[in-house]
Length: 154
Image (cartoon, rainbow, N blue to C red; front, side, top):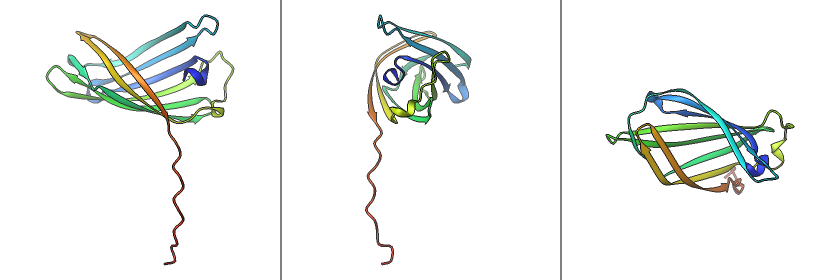
């Protein structure tokens, strides 16, 4: 997203924890081209009632697809582990768009569908605070090769 948007985009993500609730995470990323400093601002809205969490699955995969000239959508899933050992699945849907004050960019010029595989390196869960440090590997989704033609007359 940083390359595609030159470090300026808005993301709206929906986190769905099933019976435990959902929340929206809406944020903007702004990269200052002169200083290289990045600023992220955002807000969380929703209702979530989770038990105490002690772990998260060590990896998760996000599929990102171009959905329009100024929209990239993403889909991913993972799970947290509660103190009693219960696995709590979470589904995440993301919508990436240019910032409103930026000229509308046509992302179709260089956006490719991709898979982002992330690996959790550090998890710190204390009470109601959860922090993760992770690394991500990005790979393009390549179109499959055409199947050879079959003679259906036989």
